[in-house]
Image (cartoon, rainbow, N blue to C red):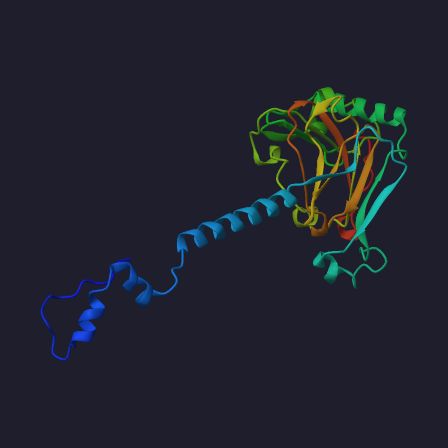
Amino acid sequence: MAAKQRSSRKSPGITKQTLKADSQPNSERETIQLGPRIDWRRIFTRLLMIIGIMIVVYFSKANKMVPFATQKEEISKRSVEIGCSKDYAEELKHFPGCTPRKCGRVVLDTLVSPSEVAALLNIAERGLSMGGSTGGASILDLHSGALSHGNAFVNIYKLEEAKTLFTIQDFKIYRITPAPPQTIHDEYWHPHVDKETYESFHYTSLLYLTDYRYHFDGGRFIFIDKDSNKTVEPRAGRVSAFTSGSENLHYVERVTNGTRYAITVSFTCDQRHAINDPMLRK
């Protein structure tokens, strides 16, 4: 940087010695007057690089997928204990001995037999053949009779053709296909907490009736954790259960091909929200 150019007119009090100093070469005057230069552009560039690396590392950890249960392995029992959220704090005194004090997840592959899986899948296919969502995610609730039908719900027990369709062993069935969503009920892939959606829930379980990568693509169940995401790959007969609070934030991958069937069974400690086993409707 060049020193500031001085006026050719003399100012009062300027000595010859000072003028002599001003007559030195430009580069020498820089050294005397400015000192070391700071390259702010380089510092700013390096700072941006560091921030960029930190962001990449953060999101790569957040999106890292760690298998908790793969489809190929048969698991007699696999469980993990995790810290409970504050979601149950107010309920501990109301439902002692039932409200979760220890939270976690468990997967079991030997609880339901292949013949039972086949029977339940047959019930699901017959029931959902009476309706089905145009948006890919179809629900059949045999407690209430709610059945996805187009972009709405109908009561399957009021359908004349369904009067002799079911037995007392039927449960709630959930079917997912790759069809594009039509309503908010079809957008099953959003992260959510079961207890926030249904306040009475304390425990949630899923029974899978079809196999990941054999009957459908996508559709893995994913727990969202701070260090990494944990995946459960559906396997026919696999039961996955977990506490329903925000310690188990989760979502389901979008199904890209085929049809995914699962039965959802939820549990509550609040007797006011209890429901009876499904009964044959006359």
